[in-house]
Length: 191
Image (cartoon, rainbow, N blue to C red; front, side):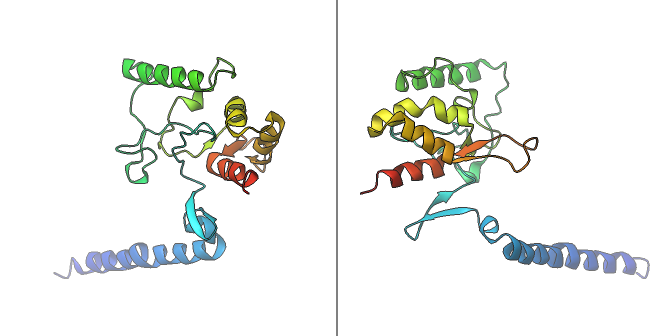
């Protein structure tokens, strides 16, 4: 039994360190240094949580910008079922889904360029992406402006104002958070 004593003591010590102290330390530091991000990057409007800047939402009305499609199970943008469709690029089922999405987008956006941005017809790997490229947002401007009866220039300026660029250009691409853009649209037309 004396042979196993160091192994058992080491197991207990490492369990306390990696299973208790380290998670506690990272939680405390996260709450201290990044409180908003640690709590889910929640967006609060009028004292009520309307979503997270990290998780997309299913906007289907013409007066709203639409994000990437979701491939999550049961309901769109379900964070409990995060994951892609797992369909290969050569899978005929994926071709059918993409073709149906392109057809629907073209029907809903007749003034837009026939070349639909790829992110509006393909889901992200998580199925939860709440951001699109500025090009995908610009592609939808005519529909949103017409549905809201606002000038195209005003909607274009709103898209530009809600475009986030990376701190250093070579680290990432500019993105538009769809939820924040749609909230800005609603605020624009608030009485």
